[in-house]
Length: 543
Image (cartoon, rainbow, N blue to C red; front, top):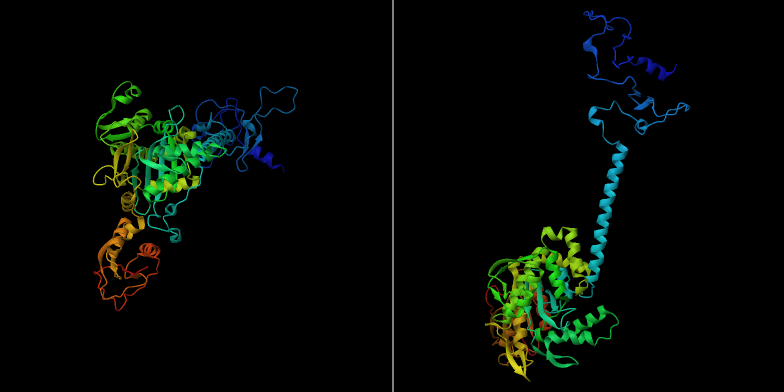
């Protein structure tokens, strides 16, 4: 027997107006509204109507409830009379599971919804790809690579540390006027940003642009001309190579002055600085003192008040004027203003609202474009972000070489030029290097803070005092300086490790500096009794 025929017979008959009668009622004759008996299952009553009130079409698709298939197609009123088969609507092609409820009427079919969702997902995916590629290519324009620093990996490989201070990341920031400015390649700003990745601190040291120096191969000039000579007379064939040669010349000029390695460089011009501030929506700075500068009033709508005291929100132009104005009590005041802007910019760029927003990141990188150059690689920049994001703004400090008690530089006149030179004498940088080494203390030396006792094991007077001064300048914690009276003239310096704590980095640096390996016991005939809690004992020999 035909199963479909059986199912058709089992369906309830329908009247013209679509009222569904209970089984046994065929739409003919009169309806008995008397109360049926208990056994009269075929008796019809108003209470037996199963459908909701209202008009229901007599034409209903016959549906297999278990298989979810339409057994009888809906008639198509637009079908041709000559056509043997009626056209099937889109809706009639869809397998139906149960009856469609009223809440489903008017909604797009599931296939159409899937297409809409897929299209939306594809659009979002393409937008994401667009921003990712834009950020990647813009980042690669800026981050050229070439620098290196053990501090980026927090100095986990001790073999990379050759001297105290190698565990810091020293970034030289140079500000130039750029295209459209007179003398666009003179470095108006020279600032060393030294990062301590172990203790999450940053120190900013500014060098005055009028410092009189020797530029290798080009004679004596102000320090702000070093980049110009290196780039202007470079033999490189492309702009990137010329910039690298300019930075190399700056390194050769500055390294003898500061006595610390420079790991990375950031070269930024005025348009980039201005655009960066605008790209993040401006920066907020707590101005410590009103800045009045008539010399740049024409850039501030002819208003000589560049910034009022108190909390101020600067756009790019205002921030640039505040940073570059030379109207101040000292050069340190100018570098301090630059520090305030850099800290405010750092906080804004690294804030969740900026860094997590791909549009803002893209705008920031686009605004920098060709106006900034750095030898950070893209991977290095990611590590640097992780390190800088851990530094609290209160842990970013400014160092100074002009303000007491560290007034190591002074102004002077030379052949009609106003210059800056060391107080100790022209080209005498010993005091400056000692101050910089101590101020930029190695992160691991600071963290371990091991105690050191120094004894003179020779007949040379003052040997222990001189060595103590040297070690202190590098940040060692020297607690005792004396003579080893019972020890005859030693041929070789002895380093004794008495530490009962983790001081492996201090030990590593001392071994390198003293050119000897540490032992665990004091010489029996030394007659030395170091202070209680001493971690390292140094007995100086002739070598």
